[in-house]
Amino acid sequence: MKPLVLIVDDEQGILTTLSHVLEDEGFRTITTRSGEEALQLYRKRRPAAVFLDIWLPDRDGLETLKRLREMDPNAAVIMISGHGTAPTAVTSIKMGAYDYLEKPLAYNRVLEALNGALAARKAVAGGEAAAHLDLGKGSEPPRQYLPPPGLPLLQATDTPQRTIRDSTVIYGLGLHSGSRTGMTMQPLPPNSGIHFLTLPKGTQIPAHLDSVAETEYATTLSCEGESIRTVEHLLAALHALGVTNLLIKVHGEIPVLDGSALGFCERLAEVGLEEQAAPREELVVDRRYEITEGGEKSLAIEPAEVFSVSYRLSYPAPVGEQFFEFTLSPGAFEEQIAPARTFGFMRDLPMMNELGLGSGGRLDNCILIGEDGVINTDLRFPDEFVRHKILDIIGDFYLLGYPVRGKVTASLTGHRDNIKLQRIILGASA
Image 1 (tube, rainbow, N blue to C red):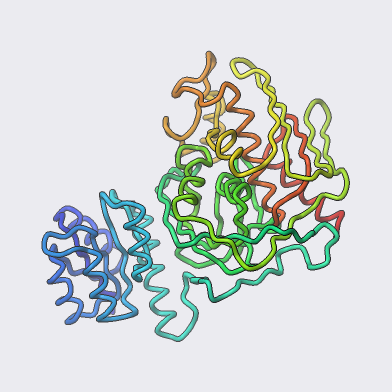
Image 2: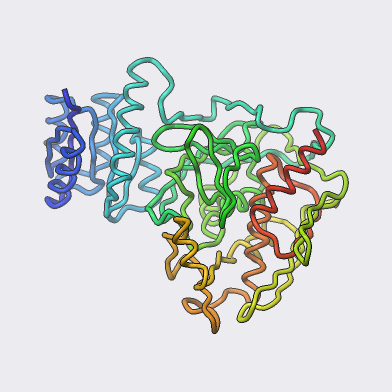
């Protein structure tokens, strides 16, 4: 028999549209605008999954979620809202909701969330690990993707490892997919590392060089046919703030927010960081490593006491030549680098469209450059372009698996070069 789905929403249009969408996909549906009736329908019909609005005329959606979970601890509930906030999303996930969707509902996200919730419910009922793989504080993911213990480049420090104090949710657009996307960040215990988890399938992708699949305009990680796109801005914030253990559940692509890393820094500050009872190890660059491809393009890293980046950027007018030197520390990153946004040229849009990239570019999440200058925003720094290049380097270099100690010198390079140099470092040090 086709799975039965209960839809609970105060808007008749949502009930009708969502019901038709799901029935076209082979599901049976029942609908109600009442939280109290939803509880009665669940008790009588035991649907396989529930779409539940945060706001209902007769009772709070979160209270309804609580009652559903008390009635059935394995209830597969997906919360939906047109005016919810991040704290509400976090609360619903903590209370047992499988996912949280923002209105207007995207067709693919609805089906992803529903199929994921059903798979998770089935896995739990069968006594297996949930399909969305909740790695909590009490479990530790494998670390075999990290450099092996005893590698000469690793050095213990007096600085403790860090994770976040509590789970949090971030929603937004994917820069290259153009789709609405969301991610949940959850704490992990010491010595776990940074891990991504694809939704709804639950494929674990470690934040490491071995996972890098593409570097065209952004850094994409892949495993077992699943991918996470545009990870570098988030990783830059984690690298700068010293977050060493974290689980990131995400739908396809990291939200671009305003095109910078500032939103990630703000959310991490809001949820708080927690120092852990284990010393942090750093990857200490032991000698000079470099790549050159002729002309002015070059990238090198050499021994230093801290992580720093010197970058020279040179584009045709109206950008011109820019140079910036930066030494990594949390405060300096948040002030000087994190606000720098991604940028693109009008002349490159046709090629990006052919590659299926840049579909999420909007007037408020990137700097768009025309023949005569920036056409959609005011710059946050006169040299915002080169600062963003440094942001990308800080993020990409966290794919070495540890905070890095070394001085990077770069000229006219991008994601592909960052990854290539890191592979040389690990290959030469193995």
